[in-house]
Every structure is written in structure tokens, then in C-alpha cells.
Amino acid sequence: VELRRDAVPLEEMVGTSLYRLRTLLKGRAVVTDLPPSLPLVYGDEILLGQVFVNLLENAAKYTPSGGTIALNAYQKGNHVVIEIEDDGAGLDIDRIRARGVERGMIAADHAAEMSDEDLRQLIFLPGFTTAAEVTELSGRGVGMDVVRTNIGRLGGVIDVHSQLGIGTKFTLTLPITL
Image 1 (cartoon, helix red, strand yellow):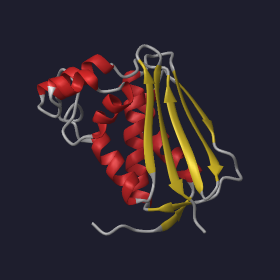
Image 2 (image 1 turned 45 degrees about the vertical axis):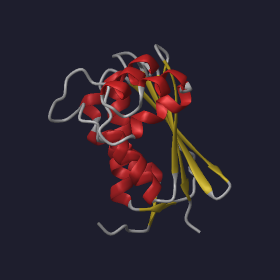
Image 3 (image 1 turned 180 degrees about the vertical axis):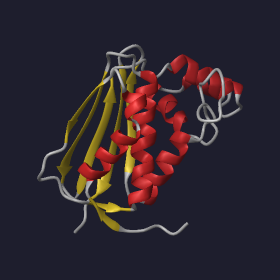
């Protein structure tokens, strides 16, 4: 698939993603802070749309009714930083460690020595899932792998911070148009 390089307005893309997910987001407060002065992002609009839908869909799935999902963006040098944060379940590091070992993605002795940060990065591996049950739409272990791949193809990076029972924040850093 050929990568398109377009000037993408984030406010429009976020609005479209939120509209597509309106049923799933129902009952959760969605707070956005996208300054009007935010520069355009340089990238493929379709890939970026998939990234936003996937991250917001995950936030909605793991944030209880009455919870909050926040999306904000700001310019940092020649990049736009986008944060998607929820006050949902957070990532369960022990479950991630156990699943990584069960699925043969990491050796048990290595898993015991891994930092929480390194263990959080496992969610981006192809086929990785902590889901107890796999359905047609979720738990197959392809969503976060695709997110990281797409962000990388656009010249960006993604990072994750999370605390069990408190929530998760994904931070995307993407190049702006010049």
C-alpha cells in the first residue's frame, strides 16, 4: 500500500473519529483540547484516521461509563504531540508479563527481569493480546501493532504510560507540514 503524504488537519480528523465512535463513547466524557493554532500534520489521512479510531476505541472499551477520555495536542518544535488519555482500567503489567510468557513472546526468566516500561511495549507486538476472549472485532492482537506500524510509517513515534486502576495515556509525536 502506497503511503500518501498530505497536510492533515487534526481537528477535522479527531471530529470524524469521535463521530464514528459516538455509540461506543456514549456515557463517557470526551474532552478535547486542540488549539486553533495547531499546525497541519504531514501524513496519510487514512492511516491517521485508523490510528485515532483504534486508540479511541480502546479507550472507550476500557473506560467505564461516567469515565473521561481526554485528547489534547500541542506543537513541540517541528512536531505535533497528541495525547489520548483515559481514566479506565490501566494496563495490568502482571497480566502482560504472563501473556508474553504464555504466548512464547518472552522467556519466563527474562520476563521476571523486565521493567514495567519494557513490559508495556509488548502491547505493540504483532499478535499480542491480554484479552480473555477473542471476538471478530477485538482481542486478536492486531490493533496496537498496526497503530505503531502506521505511526512509524508516518515518521512518528508512539509511547504509552499506564497505571493499573488509574488509566492509560498514549502519546503520539508526528511531523508537521513544512
